[in-house]
Image (cartoon, rainbow, N blue to C red; front, side, top):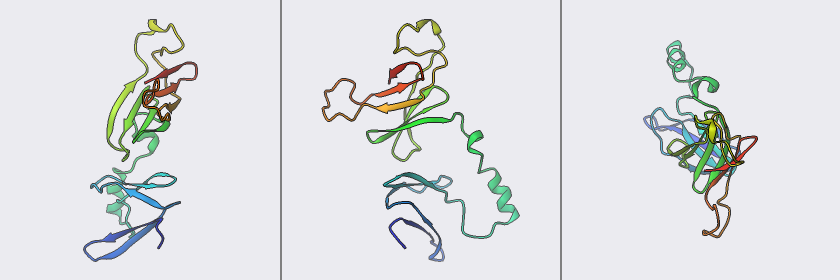
Length: 167
């Protein structure tokens, strides 16, 4: 067993149920909550470890029960993720609904949301304005500066394909 392996232990029998290997060393784990996947942080990124899949044979009842839990990722989300960036201690992402969302490091707790599109199209007058159907295709964090007094330090710069903006 290496530091890049995650071992699941059955606490009633005190036996190892299964082991999952990750591409690099495990640096942090999220808190375990019933019904939610475990977030595993490695040097190469964040990974989800599904606690519902067990190392045993599935019965027909298990398959029927799991059918309601597992969904196709294309149909289970309200919108698709277009871009992700690390913004300080949080994750920022843009989605196909025209939102930029900030999440805690666990990837589950949303802390802020900014909608870049709006309903009134009459305000489109500059390169930094957004339209009613704009989506942030690419986002970048401006928090790379070591000077905390720098202009726009800590903002998110987004590109819609035609226009630039910041949140």
